[in-house]
Image (spheres, chains in turn brown, purple):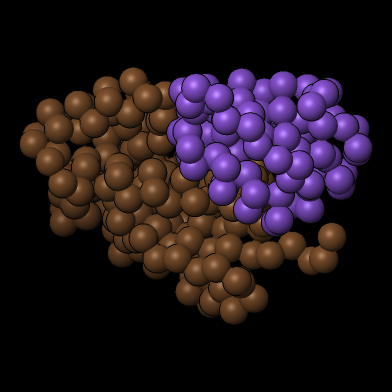
Amino acid sequence: MAEKEKVTIVVFSGELDKALAGFNIATTAAGMGMDVTMFFTFWGLNVIKKNQGRLKSKGRMRKMLNWMNRGGSQRLPLSKFHMFGLGTWMAKKLMGEVRMPTLEDSIATAKRLGVKFVACNTTLGFMGLEEDAFIPEVDSFAGAATFLGEARKDTVNLFI
Amino acid sequence: MEADAVLDCMGLYCPMPIIETTDKIRELEVGQVLEIIADDKGIVTDMRAWCESTGHEFLGVKEKDGAYRVYIKKRVES
C-alpha cells in the first residue's frame, strides 16, 4: 500500500461526550489503517490525567485551579445535561446498555491500534502540572510546532 | 458463501464492528474470507469504506431479519 494517510485530532475540550467523539474517530481511523495522532490541550488534558492521586502544583492559584479542574477520564462531565453528575451517570448507563465502549476502553483500544497521544506543554506550564499527572499512555509532551509539523502532512484534521 | 472465519458483532454500534474486524482480519491468511454478522445498519456502508481504505475486498452483504452478513476477502497483510 502507498504511504499511510495521516489524521490529527486536537482534543481541546474536557467533556466526556466530546472526548468519546474524538476517540471514536481516532480508533476508527487507526482501524482503517491510518496514522493517527491526538493532541490534548487546555481542558482536553483532563481526558488523559490520571484518575488516582492528588495533582501536585505550585502556588495558591494553580492549586485552586487543579482542585476545581481535577480531571481524569472517570471524572469528565457531559457538555449538556451533566446535572451535578446525575445526567452523566445516566448517559454512562445508557451507553453501557447498547455496549458502547467506555472512555477507558477507547483509550486502551486507541493505544493498541497505535494512536499517538501528545500533551500540550504550554498548558502544562500554565496550569502548573507535572508530567506524572498524566496516564502513561501519553507518548510525548510538545507544542504547536509539533502539531503543525504533523498536521501539514495530514488528510484529516479535526478540532474537538 | 463459505467463510473461513465468522465474527459476531450483533448488538454492537459504530465503531466497534470496525475495531473488531481490524483485530480479526489479522488472524486470517491472505485470500481467506471473513464473515461479519451485525444488526447495525451502518455496517453496510462502513465496511465498504473500511475495505476501500485498507485494501481488502468487499464481497457483498446479505440481510435477513435485521441481521447483516458482510463478506470480506483478506487482500493484504495486516
